[in-house]
Length: 303
Image: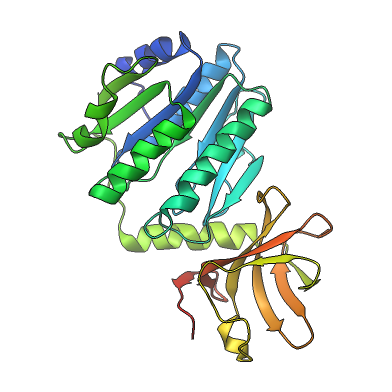
């Protein structure tokens, strides 16, 4: 479902007028395959058309709207975009996984930091496109804390039945917040696991299309090792093809990398990355997935 092929419903247009009255964070919620990204892009574009300074955040690390998978991405709409694909990512936050499950803290912190960054850049509206993870206590807590930490002004819910009510009810009638309940469009279609996997592979392949072979001294950067791979191991295959975030001193992601070789004895880290100048890389954060030679991703455990 894309805006180019979609007949925009009247209630989407009315939503733009309602949101436009009060600047701040707009968070779009919904289960998988409910049209969240399409609606988030529509809101961002229409608010931009009205002369507002608008940022859009893709907080779905598995089915990202822009930027590579395994990251959260923030874009600044400096002009009205022609399509979603035309929006370049401005700032990334590395999650290192394609699902928020098991990475709730990183996801919340990442969204918070990107929202703050957008407002520091002078944005008036920040539209956040979220994951389809909405069922269960962990999902409830994730969405609740995102809303709290970003001081969300507008909560837009796409639901087929009542699946979001546990998330929405605590937000009703809170000062400075408004909840909008919208029905899912008939045009929204479910995607299979294979389609989602293929989408990630295509995005990784596109991102790493112009890669360089780089070498980092592990003594010149800080290694962030959340998956607890024992660094003293000498087994080359332990680190081969592991996805890493090449982060700056603010822990924002400058680029992704794929480890070719990690030599503890020499202190050298060989990586594939599109980033050509590594002078601003201060942290290397290990992810929890490997990127295979065909650019598909697989979950990993220490070997």
